[in-house]
Length: 570
Image (cartoon, one colour):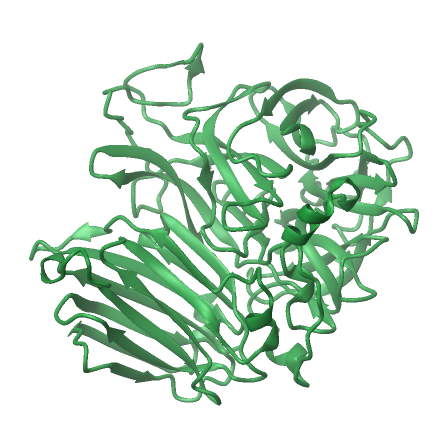
């Protein structure tokens, strides 16, 4: 969602967005456009909206904040619409929802499937699997109210409810409704950001039209400037590395087994926790890395109140380009929790070096809750995520390179060639182990992968791990693109702390990362998804990554257990 700059002073504005245009090479539009991430056909895109899965036509629908006239945020802001059969290749279908005034916006919101026609909007001619209703914020000067619109053609066009708005609290920062169905109470539940009061307001409704305020979730987590884009969803709790949704018997150090029967700040004991509720929210500006960030809370929801199990601030993604996260309503098996985010940051989103289009979404991710040990003495519940896309269709007739059991030495780099990576798209799996006995506390004990451009080797991404800090790092600053060097908010060096994935038979700790590189976007998933990191990067026109060098600063410290790199073709 776009924040109102009218309430910000000049100092705050300078820290939010650097919008200076930079001279670009011809052809940047084409070469920088990701191929397996959703991008707008033209113009401007930000928050994902109205995500849902159509079980009748077997299509994923994604709507988004859209201004098609130029590649900058502007009014009237509409909902663009794209569809995909595989969450990999997206097809633009045009504008789905428009505001009725040119000085206004159809701001962020969500989509539900009204299977049982609780709203009364549908007749027998509309398949129950396609009875979709959008709830969205109508933003006009000095006011934000909640509207609903419904579709009788499977989500391509919408009819505005004639008695809109369905919610109006006479506020100008009241937005981003995310609706879910609460089976236990047979009611619709919506979370809406009362943004600058740091509140998530929770309403219920039997029919999507008449709403009752039930409670608020307020002043929790990292506050920054304001709350945006909340969401409340039930997420499976699973055993680590198990995709069959086997319930996890999660016993904390105090020997209390936590389950979803939350009552009067106590938990029943001895039961298995099969699922838990997660409250998502976005904050901007003022995130800890600068600009925008998504956080979450794991807890219980009883139909009226959300209560987090613990008060800690937790982040969905530790990169700089992951915001306004939203989940899909409905998934093919009814259990998966799949969502995506806007892969950009309000600090520099309007200045990134593309011309006729701006922004992409993250890859879709499947979310589960698992046990995680942040240190040797603690066990916590953690939101894990792994990418969801049609990888099998992309690897046909594409080359793959591997290396394994390679101990790194200072004066002997490992060089790998991706053999004409013409698409700029590939993924990789890296597992490494660390011998911490060979370095001292004063050493910079690192190893790095240099992901090098094919046409200009001075442009490269550097990713790696450093033993004394226990952190994985990314350096995106080695580029000849003017924007990268001149924009002060496009942070070049980022890192995240990692606990070991496992201890090997030889007693050494090992770590894992899975990465997807799609032209100007890299997404990293650590230790089977216990952490994720999403970042944009920009090389010169057409200078796709084609070589990988592995180097270290210290002998016999790191062993590459396995590295595989798979080119992906479209």
